View 1: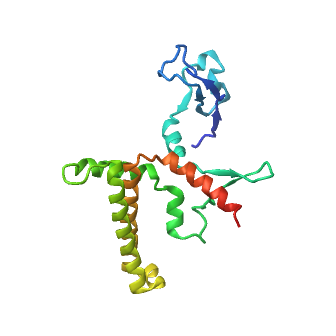
View 2: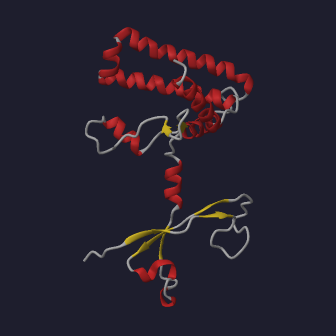
View 3: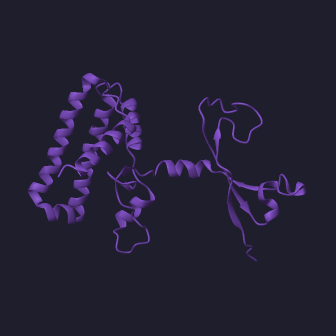
Length: 215
């Protein structure tokens, strides 16, 4: 028999130690947010409301949830002259049957810049004795390789046409593969010049705001 339950979001606190009795237990020296999520089948379980129920609360591990949310953040920009903020891109509803399968998958799992950078670091480490070492001096070489891969993308479209290149199953597969090559060298360039995902996000968002008011 199913029993009703509720979720209880605990008080959100700003500090160093959260609910701990000891100072700086995580060796974190900056003030940060503390929050918790509790599963409640009975009101007496709520934050150990009754002495005899203390120690019997059901707490949810929010670390995986926090990591998931951190990977799915959405940038927002302020609308000039108002108090409103808007997203820099729209929300994709996975249940919207009008959306493509690709868009529904994208809602569930975005492929982040940090993930691509991490993969490139692993590749560079594996082939460090064969490939040119990542450094600012190697940046221009990676840029040239990236331009070469962009040429491969252009060749597919030029040879087969815009519609066929994107609609034919095999050609689309080749097109996406070449785009992946472009991104690999793009991320190599970022590694060469030490550009972080956060720096790119800030510059991209600033450029977006500028372009939104340019014309």
